[in-house]
Length: 482
Image (cartoon, rainbow, N blue to C red):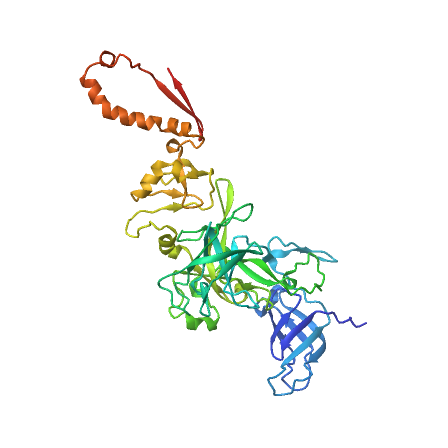
């Protein structure tokens, strides 16, 4: 008995390439008889990597029916498309999601898939005041009033960025635009910019700024990039059932990709004209080997590429780069981002107005730490993230251009416990500053006191006292007098 043709349909140009509506990737289709070779229709398809045929990665399925476009004419390039209805379902699963098989079903897990529908809270859409049916530019929120993006995304078609959208429908007006001085319109070098917004972002829960990775080397060989694609093409079926949902709406995605060395980074030719210098140290190449169905995933231009790290027993998300160019989120062809570490000096010149390029000092930013979090100073000692007004020592060291450590913003610094002013009251600040003032007075008057003889002789109204201080809590000091 003949098998009933299934609804797994391959859409092909009448040559060798095919796109599957119910599989993860674009695959190469070989037929025993091509449609262009006479009038005999093809009868078998082979799908998969031909180099892995011995490993069982090539499927051969009979074709039940060939459906040409009704207006196609032999020799014409118009309407050159056909449908192949197959006799069996196309079963193509990524190794990372395949757990095993039984007699009746395939066992899958979504935990290790390359693409996951997931919202990036720190990513903002950039709008220019004109209508567009696609979102062209994105940026990364890195501070209470700062969005980091590509230089090409601060201005589009002669219009400057007007506002950013975040958390789905929140809007914030852009008031300042900065481009890297080495950027030239249309080129893919020094393509980095900054937008300053009018209202401060209010951070809460998962909505927090991402940290900027300053290291020359990435912490691992895999990255997570942001993308967007059709919901129905990113639906994950836990069982080997056909996906028959129709949801063409766009959704945000997180894509896991491998870092690719420059000598293996063969990105699409169409981007070569705008990259006259080729890839340099400011670029990051990444991707995955399988191809994708079109519209499954498109890069969020200006969106973050990064990963997570655990510090102080907490997990933080770091941004290594921004999406620059590529096709299908780096599937099939590698994609490229612009690394943030290579532009750290320029970023500091904008974000830290008093930063001096020739100073030789280096300021450390722990933007993943919030006020009252435990932190580590540049000398390795522990401290607490507090407002700079509570830490005169750090404020002074910054003013004389010494190394200091900042926390979430330029106003929150990592302060050594012993140099922290009490924030509870004016009396508390008086007590915390007592010891320093005592040292100053003693240095100023000790010589005079010693020259006039014993203290008891010249100052009979003074008493000797031993003062002991005990730090019970960063904000609590116990003073004992004997």
